[in-house]
Length: 111
Length: 112
Image 1: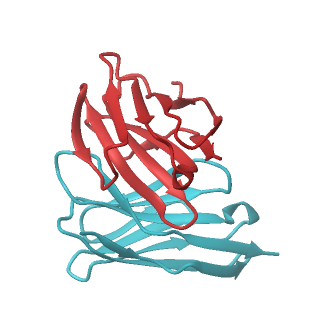
Image 2 (image 1 turned 90 degrees about the vertical axis):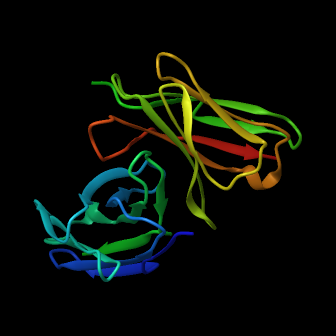
Image 3 (image 1 turned 45 degrees about the horizontal axis):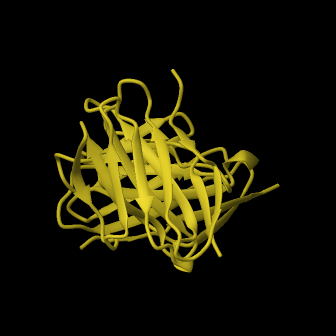
């Protein structure tokens, strides 16, 4: 089975940095994804990691350690529009697109 | 390029009825996945289709079924609806050469 854990809620101040951790135990591993979901909207793709290390994309960065079953999403220079749910998802197999999602972390950015 | 579209966007059904939801993927995408999202369970994988074949299936009862057509459009069907089937049903499409999935806006199903 798949077990993906991430904190339920986080609060941060506008302009600050927030790090959302994700730990996973899956039967296979072929990539870890981060998605952003605003209330009432569909998830949108943020990042993809399949090798260990840091991937940077503007204000957002994602890190992966496969040996530790661990990833984090780093949000820098927080803006009010970053208030959303952030979903960690793992793709276990190589020949399909089944994603197993964590429950999501709700980030609230305060002025 | 147009995004993933889903119809209908909202649906109210009664227990025992059946429902069919439709998803049109991004042009050129041959993989379509379906997910159920509820506040209690989060996003859960239903099934994935690629070139009209079901490649993977999640842990849902047989009342949930799907299919994909030659133009990659996909439908999912839920028979004998239960109150617990009330959820947001999301479909996502992928290119076989890319990693990310692109989600549609979802169909919000309410079973009364």
